Image (cartoon, rainbow, N blue to C red; front, side, top):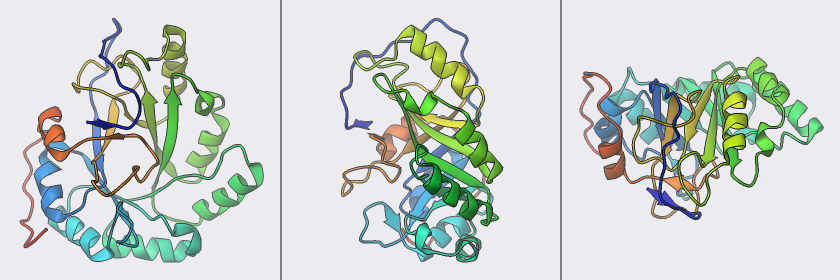
Length: 254
């Protein structure tokens, strides 16, 4: 795992642990990579746009990933979606075969911008995943009010991605009162979480049972969702157990 913030030893709190339900892996770069990961994940995530951007793949590569894994949900983030009409977003997602549209919301503390974005999101038919949320040991501002998240749900958001820093890593670990606050807050939302975990089971926040992982990209200074945590494919192959017996097509390249 690559961490672009301070790290430390890991601990496990003595609390009830949730069973892992959904695993999503983002920044997949090819159909071949998706096929290698497919038995261990429940959803693939890609960023589609200008291929000069280290996070992005082209529409043709995204379509190849879908075609190789037709039964695997595919979330597509479009960095340039603000320049597109909602109908254009839906057509592009349909062309790729995406199951979800993924985006990073505007600043929730700017009411006018947030209201305008909600209107645009309501016009996009695809189910949505909102990313770019952080709960850090020194900043829990994203956990101050559930109202914006409920508004996003009304606009079609079905998952929220939170990077938690951290429930397990000493040195950047949330205090016990903050862990309780975060646990209570996340219980009210459909959440995919990531953290500095080294084992999939036994995560201290019992209200978190769905996880996402960003694959590391050598040319990228950050992740597509502005997060700091990234994993090598080889690390995920060790961390994630096989989910179920699945049969996928074999890509010709990638």
